[in-house]
Length: 385
Image (cartoon, rainbow, N blue to C red; front, side, top):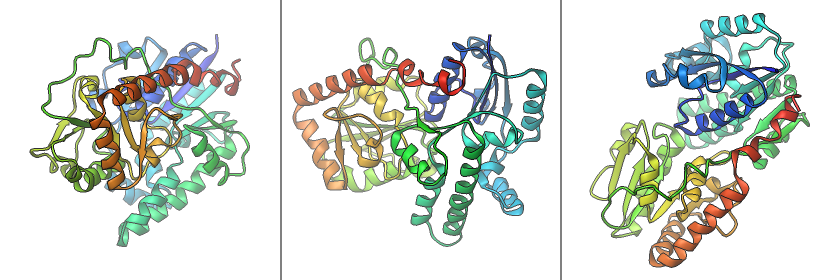
């Protein structure tokens, strides 16, 4: 049986945030190809102690707590001339663990999930690199909206991270991105033909409206889901509350997701619900008259959009959030605040049309976005076919 080493910047269980959803299904798929040996970090104490669950898919699993804060990582990055992204995930304990794992056995395949983990592999290692998104482009976009020292810092991160990403791609046997748009962007930056799009999927059996009880909510409910200490999500809901919601009298807006920042919590009021972490996001999606993804900055495929589509809810998304998803005829796309309000109002005013849109969206996810089909190319890319 093949031996597979999986390095992940966050433990792939439980799959309760976007990046962990993808790595979780990658882990499960790899377990069908061989014996998986996992080394990963836990940012949250609640992500520790899942050894029994991980044993379903992993022959061995090491999960190390990561407690280094952003401020310390930034100081280290400036002192060492490297990216904050690398410094944030630099750990002597992880370095020792990966060295131990590599010394114990010969691996038939190595899968690296997120660029920060590539720093732990020796220069001669053969591996597949899953960047998911082109993070250097994200930081370059952050710089456009920042000022002063923060603008300089974001530009520095984007520049150095781009160099770092290209260096990793030069070493990898294959480089993976979450959408063809991201893959094309990376191909334009790197002299490497072995760049492939492996799209996210969706568990349509789990995200199935049948049998899900909607939460109780008064009035038309607009729902946004996501990790709410993540800057693109924070910017999205602040923009929506400030620019779009005033154009939709009578509607309420629910921001559903763990870790709401102070800026997000401050939005709560008569027409805005901030839930924090919920036991099951499906009840909120099921209660939505419309699910929105008003992301001003988005990279790759948005799980929040696929989840709402699978739950047969009508979706209104920004062009950035819709990019990379085969959504023709299944969701509505808007640009500015007036466009968002217009599309949402059209959904609210036409319940029958909204229901038909949701049915078409679920059918598209079943047809196009099953995880098994999305991850099928991995065996060949890893040399395990």
